[in-house]
Amino acid sequence: MRQVLPVILGSLLLAATLPAQNPGMSTEYTRTLTAVSEMGHSTIKPEGLSRSLTFEEGDDPTIAAHPVSPHTPVPAARKAAEAAERLAKKKLRQEAIRKYREAVALDPLYFQAWNNLALELNAAGKPDEAEQVFRRLMQSNPEHVVVFTNLAALLSGQSRYAEAEAVARQAMKLHNFSFSANYVLGSLLVNQRKFSDEAKTKLEYAQVKYAEARTLVDHWPDKAAR
Image (tube, rainbow, N blue to C red; front, side, top):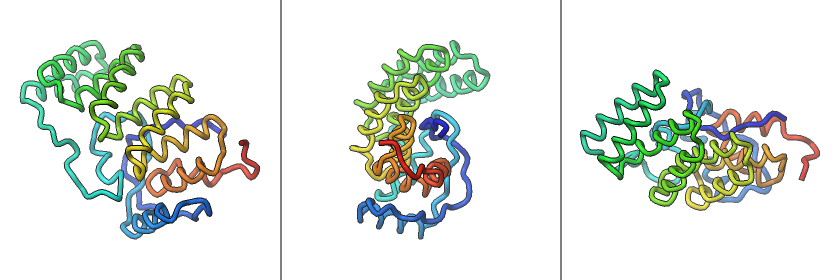
């Protein structure tokens, strides 16, 4: 089975149907899946590390809708971050990094600028620095599941699956009904050839929103390696 990296940003596809239930899935999970199916949630095609917080809207169907980020960055910091984004799109990594550093210096609470700074550091060949930023964000902004999934993706990209799994489990403790957290943990277990009931349950839950999770479940080995 091919490796599936836990990545989360992508374009919206058509609504998913309710998957067949795993006998080991909890009643609470089953109720949530049924409710989500009736709501007609969209699926997401994972494509890369997430630069935006918008994917968090609807990621956890058990909580009410809320603003993606309650923090409003100071105007100068926002201006610097927007300039950094334009540079990043042109793949001018060092210039983008400088602008993101300027943004977070102006507004140390600007989560999205910190997140995107880490992504640019990773893209510029500085994964250690990127990891440090993500780990600090996990402590300061644990309400954002994106930081956990981005760090897990970074570690998975380095084949550090056990460490990535530990991060995914931290995400699950804080975001138990997050589709992305379930997808990340399930796919990481598969990457380690842990075709366990736990991995299948996580992917069955996540496949409501993630097409790749459904593909993994559909091709589950008859005799799973434990």
